[in-house]
Structures are given as C-alpha cells and as structure tokens.
Amino acid sequence: MSLQVSRFRLGWWSFGLVLGAALVYVVHTFIGTFVFGVFIYYATRPIYRRLKRRIRPPSLAAAVSLVALALPALALIVYALSIALDELLKYVNEGAFDPTRWPLVDQDLLGSIADPATLLELDPNQYLTSQGIRSLVSSLGSAVDTVAFVGVGAVHLFVMLALAFYLLRDGHRLGRWTVRKFGDDRGVLEAYARAVDRDFKAIFFGNILNAVLTGSIGVLAFSILNVYAPPGLAIPAAPLVGLLAGVASLIPIVGMKLVYIPVALYLAAMGVLTDPSGLWFVALFAGVAFVIVDTIPDLVLRPYVSGRSLHVGSLMIAYTFGPLLFGWYGIFLAPMLLVLVIHFARLVLPELMDGEPLQPYTVDPGSLVTVESDEE
Image (cartoon, rainbow, N blue to C red; front, side):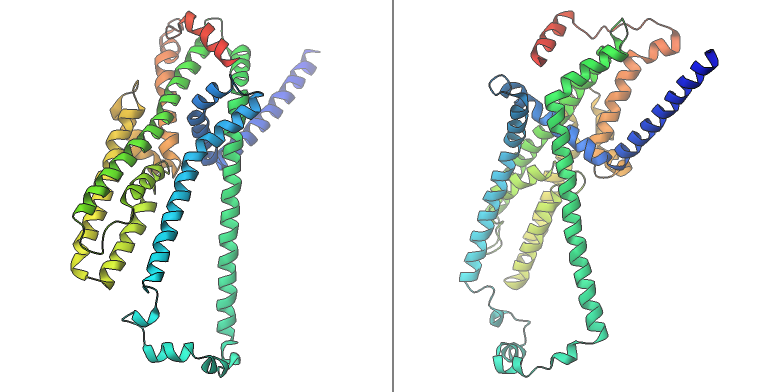
C-alpha cells in the first residue's frame, strides 16, 4: 500500500515539475514582457487604489487606471505630431521640398522625369529583369517583416497591459493565497513579501519620477541652447523635445536617443543645406543631450530617486550592468533581483546559515490591519 502511495505521489510530483518547467520556459522566453508588465502594474497601482473606492467593479477601476496612465503619454504624442505637421507644412509652403532648389539635383534630369511625354516613352521591359524582380521580392519581404515586427510588438504590449490589469484586480488575492498556503507561523514569508513589495514600489515609481526630472532637465537645457543657436539652426520646439526625452527615458538602453539623435540629424542636415559654419551648434546639442540630459540622470539621478531604502552604489551598479547582462529589460530586472537578494540575505539567510530564529521584525502588527483593509 505504501509503495502504491509513493508511486502516486511521485507521479504527481513529476507532473508538477513538468508544469513548473513549462512555466519557467514561458516566463524566460517572454521575460522582458513580464518585467515591463510588472513595471506598469506598480506605476498604475497608486492610481487604482484611489479609483477603486469610487469606481465599481474593480475591473472597471483597473481599466480606467491603465487609461489614466497612458493619457499623458498619448496627449504628448498627439501634441508632438501636431507640431511636427505644422513644421512640415511651414517648410512645404516655403518651398524647402522643391527639388529645383536642391544644389545636388541635376536640373536636366529632373526636367526629363517631370515631362509626361518622356515618361510615356520609357520601355517597361527594361525593368522586368531577373535582378529587378529579385529586388522587388526583397522589398516586399522587408515590408512583410516590418508588418510582422509591428504585429509581434502589439502582442507583447497587449500581454503587458493584460498582466498589469489582472495584477491590479486580483493581485491582493494572489498574495493572500500565497501567504496562506506557503507561509509559516512566524510570518517570515509575509515579512519578506512586504519588504520586496515596498522596494519594488520605490524602484518603479522612481523610474517615473526619474522620467519627470529628466524631462525637466531636457526642457531647461534645450531652451538655454536655443538662446545661442545660429540663425536657422534653432532646436524645433525645444520644450517639447525635452519632454519627449523624459518620456523616452522609460525605454531601456535606447531611451531618449530615440529623440535627440533624430533631432541632431535634422539640425545637421539643415546646417549642411543652409550654413555649414553653424555645425558647431549641432555638435554642442548632441554633447549636451548625451552627457547632461541622458548619461548623468541615468547613472546618478535614477539610483537616488529609486533606492531610498537601498544602497545607492549597489542600485547604480544594477542599473548600469542590468541592460548589459539581460538586454533591454535589464534596467528593470536587475534592480528587482537586487531587492530579492538583499531581503533574502537580511531576513532568511541568517537562520539558514546559523540556525537563528526567523523573526519578521520588519512587520508592524498595526500595519497589517491597515493594509488588509485597504486591499479589500
């Protein structure tokens, strides 16, 4: 009988290990998506906890919270697109896109192309060569790859939002179930979970605060640069560029480079076409954007605003080496691992090494009632 029971339990343990391995594989494959989803959850949770007291059911409160988080970014994008369209129309009206005004364009060739009679005389068969067809197929393949990339990105974004949504709505139930099923009578697991949750909230909220401060630095720096800009080389909508740089700082590794590198290329092109002697301003803009707006806040400011209860040096190392070790999501994953390791060493490791009693001295009994009532 005991042999049968042992086989029965062994079978279930084997099945559980297979399920656990499958779950680990899925999370490992989409680790960046899950990490960014956790970031969205912690960034949205303060909004959700205020809205759920006034909006019912909780699902609607969670959805409204996610929309409220996205609205400022969407408004900023719409504002940026409106300014870009206005600038484009201005240059079109001024004739900047008139090919006859470009110095490197052959006017005779341009005139022959613009003549309808010349176009009708062209022989289409000269373009229907094997090389031309291969080039067309390659272009179509690149277009399909681009569409597929955008589609995969949309799927990842949906998973991030879905994960954040269900953590907002059901996260407290998952936490209570975990503590009830796997906790001990001394409350060590609960103490560990609360300490990790507190630092996660500080780190992820610190990323939002860093984006706000970085955007403010960008607005100030680019506005000051415009005072010394040569004629025709002013930074277009300098405050907007600074704000977009702050929002882009939430994107690991590339971050605000998505903003100031295209602006620098645009200024360089305008400088070459108008007055090459003003290219010094382009180099100055690129240097200020990289050093003052990008590097200094990311390496110095972010650890201070994120790690209020953590060692600033260790957090700075995590932010620096995280993207190098794990990729684009490392700027979120490395601080998370740092928090998990620090609190494990502080709360659990002493008992495991020396047999000391596990004492959750970080748990305030009065705070337990407050947190539980707040989660309901």
